Length: 369
Ligand SMILES: [Fe+2]
Image 1 (cartoon, rainbow, N blue to C red):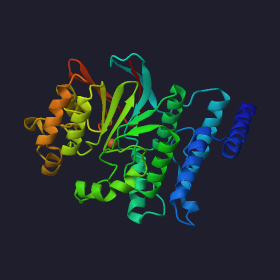
Image 2 (image 1 turned 60 degrees about the horizontal axis):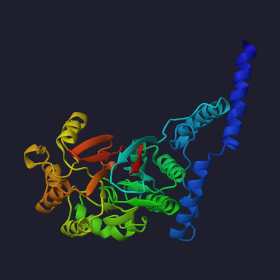
Image 3 (image 1 turned 90 degrees about the vertical axis):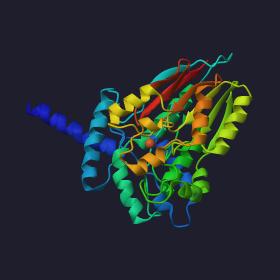
Image 4 (image 1 turned 60 degrees about the vertical axis):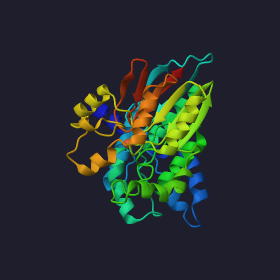
């Protein structure tokens, strides 16, 4: 018995030594190098040290920091070593993939990956202390964000395809978040729309949302390769249209451009941050959150008016209503991809139109045929 325990402890020590010193997570290393390159490009002289991307734990996909974090890191390295040794798949904090099919009536089928709401919450000394405190709090809510980017990139490479990201890639604007987003969009082929967090400075602050978006627009856009407020991508005869409806509304210029695209006659896949109101997603949201929230075009009679600020922020305006009517009565729209709700859901918008909402750690492998 003693021999067995000793052997076990020796093995633990050996594995922890190996794990701490020699086990290199290839995915972490791959993204780490690209993040560092992007970070260096954007950083001023002398900031090299703060641009290093934190490595996440290969066992739980979280970033362990601080005094206790060190011990957790050691324990997890041991556990990871055992899993490697006995070929046990490590699934903690990994992206969960599902498959969906969109019938667009095209001759050459294609695939892509849909993900959303990664909520990168990184920060470094280039940002102020308030943001560094915010980062610590928000990281605990989205501990696997970096792993999600790596998993998605790996899956997209396997599919030999691109990634659609429907917003909230970053949780708030920080130099490090933008560097990381930039590395992700330059390393992978990413087609994205903005979410409500893309232009957020401190997640919840009192500054008017549209004023803040205007002031941060160019800075945030520099981390993406397509216009995240409105973009069109033609793939195998199907138009993917990304529209920023992160504040639950569509603007006149976006509606005008959507009409122009509809007139072209291509089958359309809409990529939005906030899903459209439907009775089923409304009921599900009330079930999950206790009240209806975060959908676009909820009828006024069904809105939650207990918080006037929230109500006014999400209340449908005339332009958004027109966009809703257009989308829900347009045969060319074959599917809607969305996020924002932080749950997985397939919603029936009309008898022939579905919208697919993905959670923060979910990826839908979308087959279009
Ligand atoms: Fe989100």
